[in-house]
Image (tube, rainbow, N blue to C red; front, side, top):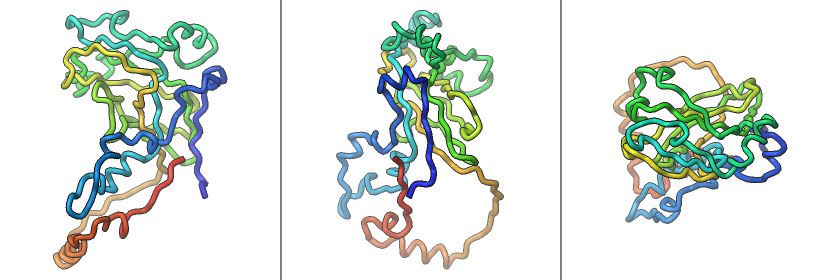
Length: 247
C-alpha cells in the first residue's frame, strides 16, 4: 500500500509534449552493473545491497533540452559561446512568455555567490551555470527532498550542487546550479543531450534527532562479526535489509 506520494507538475504546454518526464531511479540502473555476476566463488559489487539501494532510491530529473557547452575554451568565459541551448531553443521565448520555467534553459551564478568554496577551483574559476527545471515538486506535509547527482551513476562531465528543499511548502520549481568537472576536463567542449539524468531526488520525513555516543562490549562485536563472517552469499539482504518501493 502506498500512503506517500510525490507529485511532479509542469505547465500544461510542456506536459503535453510527453518528453523527459521524471522517472523512478530504478529505471536507470547502469548497464555495467546489470552485466556483473555475483556468486560465492566470485563476489562482486552486484551483491552489495547498500550500493544497489543507492542506484534505485528516489526519482530522477532529466535535462530538459540539449546544452552545447564550451567551458574554459581559450581560457576565457563568454556567455554567448559558453552555454547555448538547442532542442527547445526555437520555441524557448514562447515557452517563457507562457511562464514555463525554461527561458533559454539556464541561468548563471557569479563566483562571488560561492566565494571561498572548493567549487570554484573545480569549475576553473568560471561562473556557474544553473539548469532551469520545468517541474514543480510536491511532497506530503512534513516531507522534504534531498537533491544530489545520480548516486554512483553520475555523468562524469558535470554534477549539481546538492541541496535540501522543504517541498511540502515551497511553491515553485527548483533550479540546479552545476559544476563542470574541471578535474577531469580542464577544457570541455561537449553537448549535454536532452534526457540526460542529472538530479536524483530522495524524499525524507523531517524528524528531530539527538546524538548518543557510547562504547560497545568486545563480546558483542565478536559475536556479530562471527555471524556476519559466515560464507552466506546474501546474508545482509536475507537478514538485515528492508525492501523499498519507488513507483
